Length: 171
Image 1: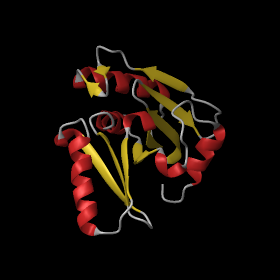
Image 2: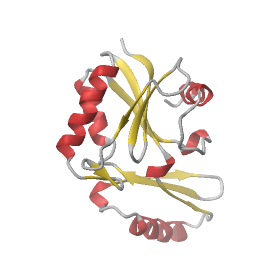
Image 3: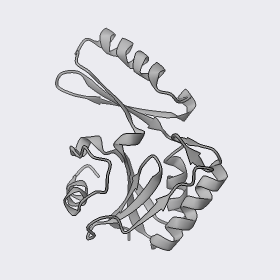
Image 4: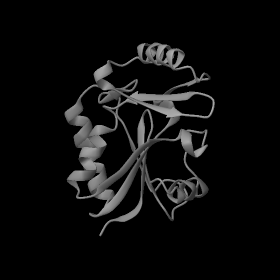
């Protein structure tokens, strides 16, 4: 039986672990600059090993984990047009502007009433976290950007922020 109570908040230079009943992070893993720099992983093996070592101390097996992507690792654009041709053109421009190779980029298109929101990130940042979580016999429920929750800061999350995220029925 999986328990839903962990958020891993991925930032440009750290990973913070939050529990449903805590105010502020329970623990934080700072990424050394020789392993990750400017959202690029220098050593994937060392990065995954660092994450696994950290999570083995923090997670019990059978926990449900949500990976939350900080605003400072996201690239975002709003397209304010319902016209499909304009949207396709703007999506192409956006993907060309994202500073990662397309094989490293995860892009999400979120339809809105007035057009489309685009969100992209370097998936090489969160894929090793998923692997590490699964090694510990936990389950990743979702990898989601901070944006849909209306939280506009990249500092520590508050107890209210955590409650709002866990109350989301789509998780």
